Image 1 (tube, rainbow, N blue to C red):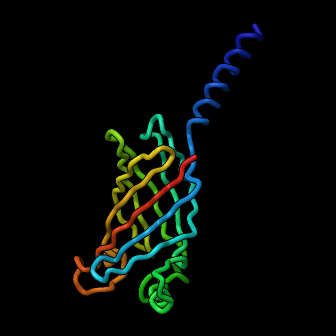
Image 2 (cartoon, rainbow, N blue to C red):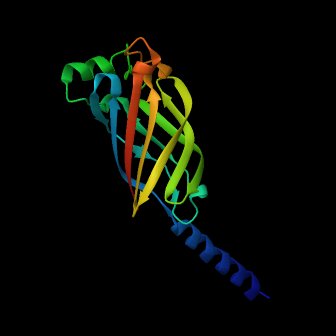
Image 3 (cartoon, rainbow, N blue to C red):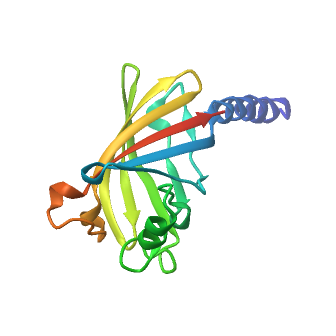
Length: 170
């Protein structure tokens, strides 16, 4: 009689280990952006992630991470200082840019990640389209900085920012 509970625990324990082994984490990230109307390109670093990537069942994946606002770099010290100030990113009061997925779907080699992006104190839904390349996810999305309280230009359409993400997953 004692053998049956033991086998039950052993069987489901092994299955649980197998299922957990299929979940991978983002080990490294490269994040680039371009402020289109000014032709300004840059990077942002200080990436931290609690993401769980399931290659076999992408819909079970969770993307959750943040980057340090202070790490924003456009290769121009004066511009970086200005962007980090209270007028724009306000890095003293808002040290992180946050993202958390609300759903993941797969369409062939593409993963569509829906989620919420928080910059400063504003949270907005966005969609990121990723392509899987071996153990890497490469994605992109666009946003308007003015929607997050970062008004560089007067017209909304002149505040377009394109973002490219490269995640190494293991």
